[in-house]
Image (cartoon, rainbow over all chains, first blue to last red; front, top):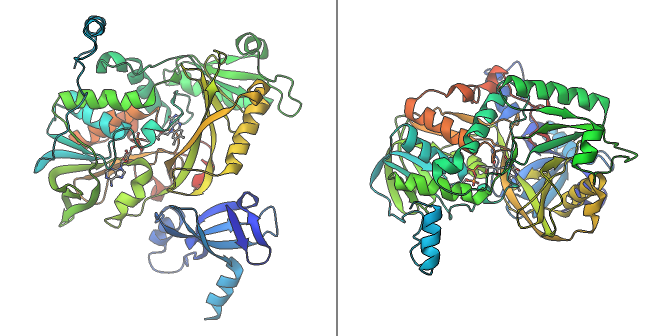
Length: 94
Length: 416
Ligand SMILES: Cc1cc2nc3c(=O)[nH]c(=O)nc-3n(C[C@H](O)[C@H](O)[C@H](O)COP(=O)(O)OP(=O)(O)OC[C@H]3O[C@@H](n4cnc5c(N)ncnc54)[C@H](O)[C@@H]3O)c2cc1C
């Protein structure tokens, strides 16, 4: 698989480390209500869809940025690649 | 149908015209006592043990494809009971004991071949870890012994003992481990379950569950609605997809694992050999092909095919361990979808929905577990309580912090 890194262009997926579902970007607040249940969900439960999946890839053998890759788990087609820090910054600005 | 030497001779004399299909091809009835969703090894074994041990025979096994189309017909066929943790090891030893008697029990030749499993180690630390593992195996009633370099030189002289990066220091040897003809396991269980009255319904996909007031009372399928007092899900790599139909998220990611077979070679590899410095395991099939594998590809996938970097990695591991395989040509590669759990161990448990049960999370080690998984799942379905040797394979271990993590890798499925 080739991942179209927003800064570096097409890179071989073997340069990356895979971290799974991009829901990991949304760590629950430990002070919130039901935070225990939320953390169990955050740590252990996954949708694991057959089809479009937003997931985290870390460019370890490259510029060490975290990417959010939107990929089809049935065909391995990569639909979108974004910088995780950019997404988070945009979200926090809201 | 009963197999025997006399039957083979008799059929040979009569042009082999008297052999019959091993199982019927029934239409689903309106209702059953138990429906098993998924006709892989585990589902069929469950149906067989329900019928044989618990005398429940009003059962249907619904399979979306044909029997053996899932991981049961895709794996590298290794069986062993060399786990470390007390929650796992007795279960896998139970499984190995069931394998040892399987062919007699099913009257079917599944080619259970206890040719031994050898785990090579390459450093003092790794030896210490293997000694500990060997002791855990012995304590569970399994067999294990530690072999030194001289023993290995006699047994497997073709290994690269002087490898400058990963010199070989010895091996952990389990003589009772080995290989089994994988799809014959599905066929054998299917034959004996069917002959006890279990309906095996192929090309019938479960599309949803019938649930009312928190109770499951059947399933919707591509062949219509089938009611049942209990439903047992057992669909390996498709676990999240099936449980997702009623909104249950599992502690599971689906990943692709590839298997490899070389051209046929003369007998050279005596048993199963695993590399200790990379991920590579190999055995030789009765037809002579080297059957080998390594790591999962490492990203969520339902594609049943993998990518080239892992193929390269597996082949490098093989050549580092036994350079002689470097010139063997690869004949076939394929992939299967693994239900990788968050701690690398399986789940055999009830769900939050009454009368709905779940079996999955086998990672890439579920073939060896087939008999015990069926046995313990049948126990749970029939009695409502966990079997002693599977009592820790529960959903709530994640929230309780009682993970069964053989490798100590944490909640990262692609590292297990
Ligand atoms: C390449 C590879 C190598 C492996 N090597 C080993 C090994 O050496 N040793 C070892 O112990 N294990 C190994 N494994 C793991 C082992 O094969 C699996 O863990 C085990 O087979 C899973 O259980 P099963 O046989 O029930 O799965 P499957 O055979 O996959 O059964 C699940 C069945 O459910 C069906 N299904 C799915 N969805 C539905 C639905 N909605 N309705 C009806 N049916 C449905 C599927 O069609 C499938 O037939 C390997 C796996 C692979 C892929």
